[in-house]
Length: 220
Image 1 (tube, rainbow, N blue to C red):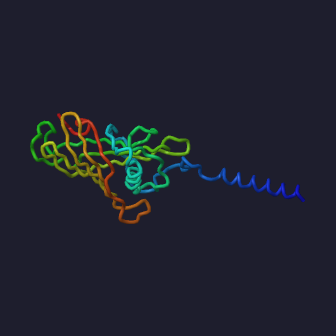
Image 2: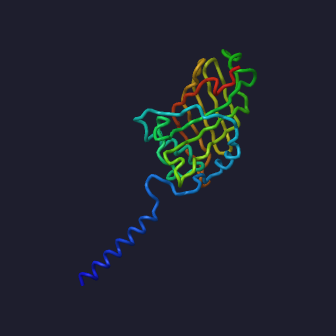
Image 3: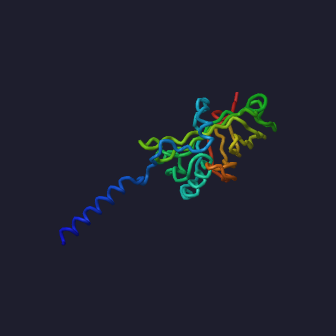
């Protein structure tokens, strides 16, 4: 009797172990593509935009959980929150972070000759932003695609900047100041939809940002 009971328990342990092996492991995403909404597919075709991701979006280390929540809200047009791994509030930690680039010009001329005036930005100014989480590049995970915006509205007044970039699914706003070296400020977003098509989407502040002035603006 004891022998039969032992065999039953052993068989049960083997079955449980086999089932556990089939489950998604913590710290990875076993999906071929994490983009499930419309924006990723639209932006992938624009990936050859020539824009470099030399700006960073960040927050204080103590604000890590709020930063990650904001990033997941921003990505929710296309990616389910559970498909997003750790994203550092300090870009580069765990090879993760939020990076961006742009090419913004005054409606006429360049940033240098427009300095000191209240001017509008060119409507075709461009902006790209990409989130790299800790799962990016793992064997079972794809990169989260970049979001590319090619429509803009905003003003440059003295060294103060207020620009919003649009696509069909939402917008990103940058507000801040620039000097000869750096453009810095804070970045927010406003999504129209979620990945499943429901409305409204998430909105809020994404974080602080910083990028070399002439990497972002047409200076000369």
